[in-house]
Image 1: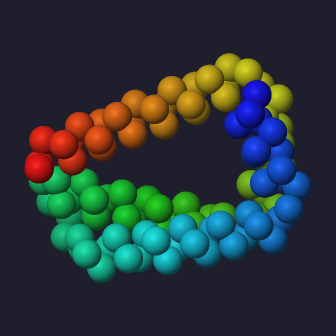
Image 2: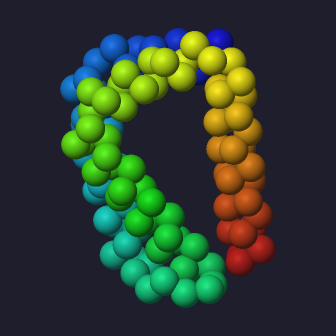
Length: 103
């Protein structure tokens, strides 16, 4: 319920959503500057993640209104919120595992 309220507030302000997209672009490009080679290794995973974050930022900046409308529709669906939360939890756990094994 707390996340639903947070996303409702984010979708209520298109300018915040746009600037979050710009932040994603900058963050993704910084990741690509550090790990720019796609390979089948840990560094390649970070390069792929950098590309995905940059792409997400571009989509958020270019299609702000469309994504806000899509997000408002999906906020009403409990199954989607549970699925999205599970996917993010699994991806975060996998990245944490990879970082931990590399140390």
